Image (tube, rainbow over all chains, first blue to last red; front, side, top):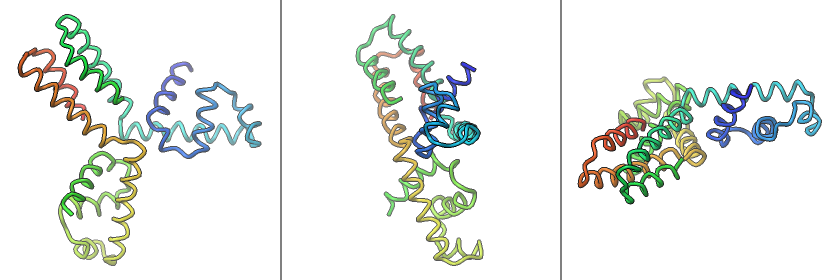
Length: 108
Length: 108
């Protein structure tokens, strides 16, 4: 479950701008604020099942976006490369190169 | 017009996976293969106006995706940084670092 939560938080980071306001609300209450389905249902005056269905569909939507755009996978690949660059630069410090690695990471 | 074509080709590169098959067909015939609206209309047995409307809407869709995700802008920013890295590494050749820059560019 923790693994799923981490993945959903990660996907949400990348694709939240493509979701509707309601999808964003439910997802962030459930995955970021850790509210229960019942608590979200109560807050919105809808059934627990309605919240559950909406969140399940949104999870699938996020996975579909990742399948199409692969932003999370590319981010993770770049992060590994940045780490390798920093390791190399630790031995052979080049301040200008380090500044460029910083600039790249800031774009993430 | 050339500038617009370049931008649409660039946006299409990043977001084509989010378009419908018909949107992809029209956009690639018009912007990549340089067919006229009339030629596309004839090929699909629809009016020139229908093709025009579809393409205009798709252009707006691509701009909306760019506004939300900024993939083209980030790509361009990274490309500039890669160029700076290569310039620095040209003077202070470090084959391992160059290999990592290659790996980063391959992810684009």
